[in-house]
Length: 269
Image (tube, rainbow, N blue to C red; front, side, top):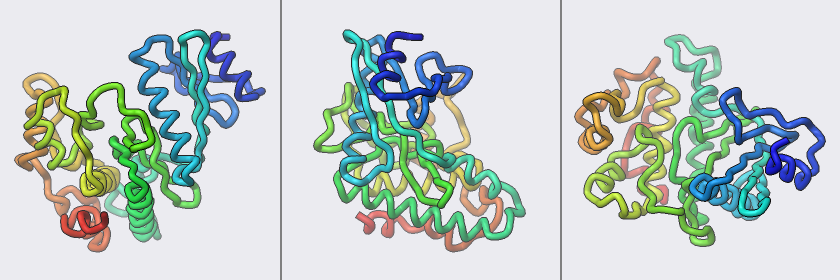
């Protein structure tokens, strides 16, 4: 067994045989109730250590149901975060991305959306910024509770700063106000997120998971399209598709919640 993985398993008291998290992982495993990751390079270790420290602080503050552990073998790092039951928002919304969702899906989605905003309010009120809100970083439990996961970009006054300046999370999850700040600043400038930025990001993530369409632009970085082009799309709204065209079915309350009025999002601070 890999020495780092062996050290983690022994420290955690796990008796189950570790198995790769997916067929493509060779430094991440599932063992008992834990997701274990290892790193032997400083550049790889830094985000893992930041994430597990964030999870530990969140858990200690009653803001996250999972705990975290970490340890070293020499200078090499292992981290472990408890698994949470459930599926990410993208998977959870799959039945709703059709013209005829199953009975009861619409009110459940509206309820989950309200729960997600309430969970985000609690995080923001405690001084946290998640930093990478997207459909795959929002977990829906079997009881339809909401937890934000993957905290490698998390900000908090009691958490050590990120290894480098914060320049946003997933490209397509960037919101217009943040895109404008990214375009107007040098690559070494730290972007400070506000609660309104995070609320807008959550609204966009809900829209994305429900409609199946990226929230601000359908274009991707690739041949002929730079990251700056993508950020310009988002900042200016020049390729934005209205929700009334992207939605799989009308849902007035949900649409008002996730797409509507910016003042409501700002006033939630």
